[in-house]
Image (cartoon, rainbow, N blue to C red; front, side, top):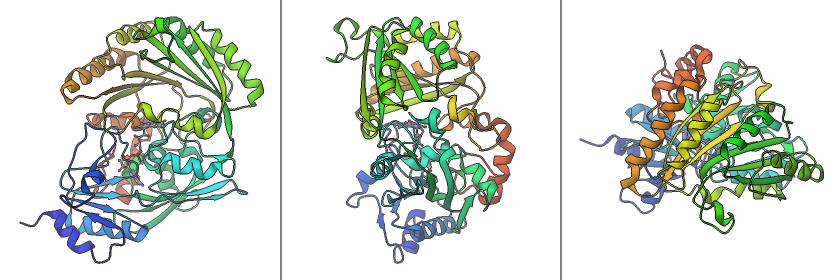
Amino acid sequence: MVEASEEVYSSLHRRFKGELLRPGESGYDDARAVWNGMVARSPGLIARCSDVSDVQNAVRAASEVGILTAVRCGGHSLAGFSTCDRGMVIDLSRMRQVAVDAEGRRARIAGGCLLGSIDSATQKAGLVFPSGVVSHTGASGLILGGGTGWLTRRFGLSCDNVEGFTLVTADGSVVRANSKENPDLFWALRGGGGNFGVVTEFEVRLHPLTSVVLAEGLSADIHSLLKCWRAFMEEAPLDLKWNVDLRLAPNTKKVPSELRGRPVAGSSLVWTGDPEAGRPYLERTLSLCNPDSVSSKIVSFLDLQTMADSDFPHGRRYYTKSGYFAHLDDSTIDRMVEAVATMPSSETQIELAYLGGAAARIAATETAFGDRSAPFIMNLLGSWSAASADAGNISWIRTLFNQLRPAMKPGVYVNFMSDDEQDRVPEAYHERWDRMVAVKTHYDPNNFFRLNQNVPPL
Ligand SMILES: Cc1cc2nc3c(=O)[nH]c(=O)nc-3n(C[C@H](O)[C@H](O)[C@H](O)COP(=O)(O)OP(=O)(O)OC[C@H]3O[C@@H](n4cnc5c(N)ncnc54)[C@H](O)[C@@H]3O)c2cc1C
């Protein structure tokens, strides 16, 4: 019997302008690798599209044959949704054009862009697009799920800054979605993930910004730091983003020797307002929480956006669980502090961020994105190297998540979900679920796009 992927290849190869890669061919092994080393899959065909018509042809050919199809931008899906075994991957890595309209403060971003491709292009005009904190992350997956980062409190989520989408839907048509054309689809694409089609272009708003103030602190007294942080953030100005990571302090020169290897809270504060005023403000703010070390500096936006890149390398093993808290109560803090001491990997962290700001000012009904009102987002991010350590690390994350779960608000940010949480997708969209299902049923009645935080059609 002919493999389905071979049927797709036969139907595609004469009209395909990009690259078609099959197992055993040169370049295939590199092309099949995704960011999370736990996800080692072997697609039957990787279709590296060079333009929109390649995407249309790939979707039509796959749909006719009925082959399982994944869509990949940056390959950073924590759950591993952008690859599959034996099926086809629509790979957008050749589509990384960014066209900036400096005067209009707008850009057109192609569907295969990484965050770094956008930042380098927009910074040439002194402008920014609010996105995530690691430059090798794919922009499409991040924006479609929502997109949080250093600028979220000031300018909103990434999806809040999208004015229009162009996508190839399940029947191979090119469809536009914006406030005037297909408004229901426009609503669903802002937070609804990859459920509705292959986005080939985003039209986005940009904002002027070239540098920020960054202050960092390390605290061995995690309890005090978290109590101070949770109180401070309630009244914090929009210009301040303050993220906290709980972890075992690394054994590096940057860390005071008495803290190395100990449970610590790392604070990273970014100030997007006037830098001269911001620096003393940040140091004062952080000092209120009595950290063991504090530093501050003015950094370029490009340095800010790349400073965490090497902390999250491709190919390491990752597992995640995430949730929202309306309040961070004392017993939740106690539980987190106890857990840090038992972390099975020094690369693992409990990431905490406070949303609020511009993201929370948009009405819950305006986009499909999950909960804008729950200010605390927690992400338990397990990271380790050896496959033999999978079970211990995954079990540590699951156990802690189950202990913290009763204090969480229902809801989850889809981009921080793992592959064993499909049952939480309705929870992610809660009161928006029925509308999501209706849009999905209209645009993808056969669930062609199902390798994602899936919203099944009726
Ligand atoms: C190192 C790292 C840092 C991160 N930092 C942040 C952060 O700061 N803020 C934040 O909000 N999130 C962050 N995330 C989570 C991130 O938003 C998700 O992992 C996101 O899915 C990554 O997008 P991608 O394009 O790389 O993913 P991919 O793996 O390529 O795709 C992810 C999903 O999106 C779909 N998809 C991809 N491209 C398209 C397209 N063009 N059209 C339709 N569907 C598409 C895929 O089918 C898949 O379901 C981070 C993740 C990692 C690994």
